[in-house]
Structure formats: structure tokens, C-alpha cells
Length: 231
Image (cartoon, rainbow, N blue to C red):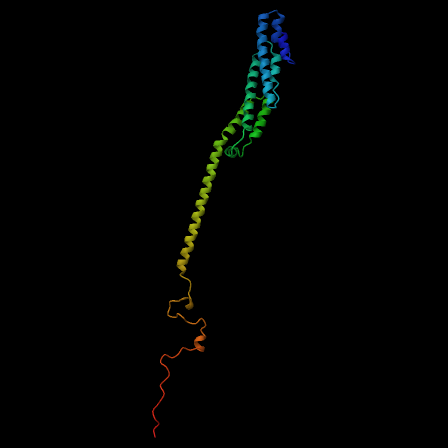
């Protein structure tokens, strides 16, 4: 009894232990004290893990322990649940603190794992029934982020390839349309000076030169009249 009181600290020994002692039922009292000692050990483990995670342990276990009158069934169930909850919370904290590769960060885009973890912490301290579920959801979110990131990366690359194909097809179509319009319009007009192989090759650039510098007559001037004058 003295050891139980010392182990309990500020947790009062429950009636479930005091009752058999008051009736000198030492066998029953010893059995109840062993159960109580095991629950106090769970309490200490919960407090140690919670302190490492910087969260406050729930108060439900203390209330159930001190209120135990006939058995420790309720207190034992609460201790088991709180141990499970705090361990799940520790796994979530570890998952969130693990360094992330780019695919994980890509997979977490649009999610709020930090806020989800904060909600899980609050649920644990409040003794909520869904604390472990919330913590496990954070772990599942981070574990699945790699696959999600891979899927998003593949989708992004596929989208870029589709845009590239559309751009290439558009450019080719515009080029063909421009070429077709040129064929319908015909070649550009060429001046006589540009036709180096035509019949007017060598024609002066200034048409007035044809008047100021006439070409020589290929026949030549008429022969001089050399006949003697008639008498």
C-alpha cells in the first residue's frame, strides 16, 4: 500500500484498493494494487511520450483511475487507448519532420499536413476518440505524397508535350498557308533591268539616253555622188 501511494504521487489511491484492505482481504487488495501499479506505469509512459512531443496528456485516465470502485477495466481501456494515440502522434511528428525530396513536396501541394498535425495534437490533449485516426491520416498523407508527386509530374510533362505538338502543328499549318498564297499570287513583277538574260540586256537604266545618244545606223550614210556634173 505504501509503495502504491508513493507511485501514485498526486493521484489518490482508488476505492477499488482501499475497500479490500478495509475488509482485511489482503489477497484481493494485493491483486487490485498490482492492477493499479500497472495503470500508473502506463500513465508514466504516456507522460514521457507526450512530454517528448510537447503536448499535454489527457486527463481522462486520472479521473477513471481515482474513480475506480469495483474494477480497473475503464481505467485500463483508457490507458491502452492513450498509449496508442500518443504513439500514433509520435509517428506523425516523425513523418512530418523527415526531410522531403522534390516529389514529396510536389505531392503535398494543396495539402496542409502541418495544420492536420496540429489538429491531431489538440485532439490527443482533449482525449478525443479520433486522435489516433488524425495522426495516422498525416502519416498516410506524407507516405502517399511520393506517388502523388510522380503522377502530377507525369501529367505536367504530358501537358507540355501536348502544347508543344499543338504549337508545331500550328506553325506548320501557317507556313503551308503562306506558301499556298504565294503560289496563287504568282512571282513578283520583274523590271527589264532585272532580266539579265532577256532581249533587252544591256539597256540603259535611263531611257532618255536613247534620245540623247542614238545608236549608230548599221547601214551607214548614203554614198557621196561622185558623178561629174553634166554640161
